[in-house]
Each structure stands twice: as structure tokens, then as C-alpha cells.
Length: 339
Image 1: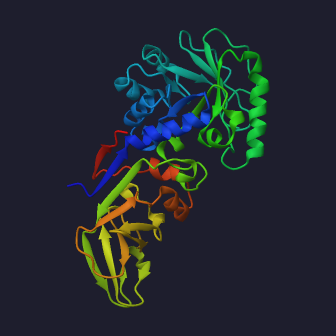
Image 2: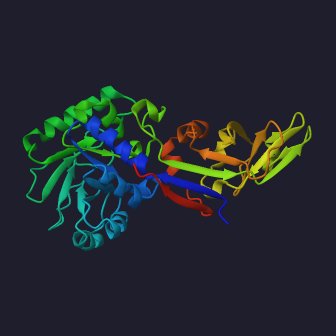
Image 3: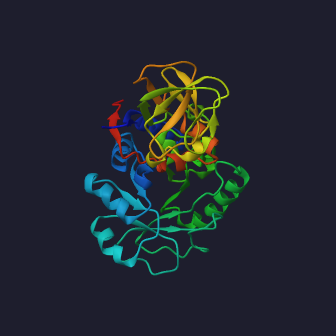
């Protein structure tokens, strides 16, 4: 029996894609669907993004790209991460495009994008060689587009200077944050991930940038218990009642991706926000209630104004990590939204 339900609003994906296309002002939108679409479903999100005007999908690995290719047979798919020699033949057969970020010879017969390191200090060439005929794109990766705009502008200028002589090739640099804040980063395409899913690349409210959260996560109260003063709930007695206190148990835990460090966050019980108390278990957590509520009372973990970014602040992380880590094995998953 499912203990929770995850809904993916494909209508919101399409609307977010249109917002990003508007911000790109004529540049192409390439939808980043790595990590199974940031936990949202790469094929479903990728198809919705393409239907809304995106022109390519980006994955991190060949394996991810092949899974996308199985369903989205005509999509342009670009593998952003490193590729092993033994994967090249399969990548070529699947009509994938690859990124080259080191000095190894280019793979024969496969379209490639040369990646220049302009300041991320991770993958990338230190100098851009003269592109050969199989090179279809030039790219780099911004390190601080959501935080330090001055350094981001420095990277943009470095990229521009290195690639201006090859402006006939597709140049792509902007991520979600740069797409929304840095017009100088647009070039020919923007590789957008987190904003496509309606999550803010700035840790702010997504509506500030016209975005809508795509993922909803809901469960219910399955037990209600009255703690007397001095009684506790959960491992380690991390919550001890100082007065008679009602708690409700929700059958979702860290095995589902509702992390142990989310104690103290808020979820919506019925219509009201309530605090998560005590240690989060593998398959359940407790919420403090003002009074007894009926069994089956809906609990919204994400959605209806409960944001992944709010949970991330409690956990001391980012929304990207939270949604990528959600793997509720006992959850029903459904797709909604046609607009």
C-alpha cells in the first residue's frame, strides 16, 4: 500500500520552460534532465520541456542519455559529463552529442562540444584548441551565477574572448541562475536545470522569478498520540513534551528521502503548518498538533506553499540535493497538468 504520493505537474514544467525561453530572449533552451530529471523523471520532464519549446536535453552520463533516447527517439541529447572509451560506440549508435573537457583525441564520428574552464576549476580545457569539423558547440560552466555576479561576469568575458573567433558554432554558458539574472551569459543556448523544476537557483521563492514548483509530495496522519508532560517520541528522546501534547505520525522517513536533519521543518497538516518533532525514523516522522485530528488527515510535505527550499534551509543544504535524494519506494507517483 502506498504510504505517500508524489505528483509531477507537467503543466508547470511547460510554463517554467516558457518563462526561461522568455528570459533567454531568442537563445535556445536546453533542458537539463540529469539525475533522473533532478528526481522528477527525466523522460516525462524532458518530453514536456521539448513540447514547450526546448530544443535539446542534457544528461550527465551516457547511461542517462540512453534511457532518455529509448523513449524520446528524435530528441537532441547532449552528455555533459565524462565518457569512457567503451561507451563511445553505443553513444554514436544512439546519436548522442558528447562534451570533451580534456586533451584526449576527439571521438570519431560523434558531434562534440569543447568545454573550456573559465573559473569553475573542475572539468574543462585550460585553452581552447582550433575546433575541428565535428565540433558543434563551445561551452563553459559558471561557478557563482547565483551568488557572486562579479565573478560570473568575469567568467562570461573570458568565455567570450576565447570563443568570439568561432561564433559560427553554438556557444552555451548560462545555467538557470544566469538565464534569469545575467543577459550577457545568453549566447546561443542556456542549459537550465533547477529552474525548469520550479525551484529557485537563488534559494528564494520561485514565484519571484515567475516559476512554479513541479513536484508535490503528500501523505497522511496514520496515528495520533497524546504525550503527557515528560513523555517523548522517537529515537534518542529528542522531543520531550513539557505539557500534554498531541502528536501525529506520518508514514514517511529517511528511507524515502525525508532526511533525518529535517527535524524542525514545517509540513502542512490539513490546512495548517505544523512542526516536525523528534528524530525522523527510517519510515516515519512525528508532527506536533494543537489538538487531536482524524486519522487520514492529509499531510503535505512539499506543495501548497511548503517549499523544498524551506526544508533545505532547515537541513543546511540546497533544494537540488533534497529533490535528487527523494526515492520514496512506497510512494504512488502520478503525472498531472496539461497546460
